[in-house]
Length: 131
Image (cartoon, rainbow, N blue to C red):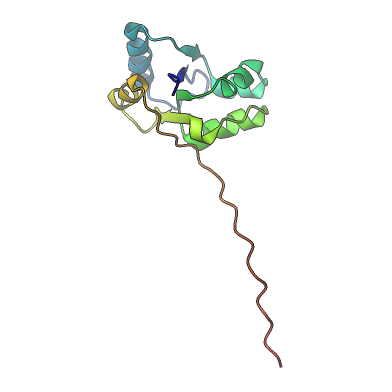
């Protein structure tokens, strides 16, 4: 497996991610020397349909430090840049510690966690009881 691309979202506008977590993750990414992309705010990028999201979605495996996996999936979907569920790991900076996030970002493996909508299998028609 190729080394996953890393995307860091600073959540500049909504400011729902604890400042100490996002600052620590960004600092440690910078100190690590690993290549990563940092964006001010994925929500804003999605709202203006930034083509960079399509490029990232098409780049292969990716780890995204942002917020809830379902929210990140929706932001990419909103601008026709659907992420590949089995090639995407979203690290929720609202729920995880900086240590947990940085450990996952540094790891070569990928733990895909995008929610996948399950479709119900076709159910056989139930015969109606005779009167």
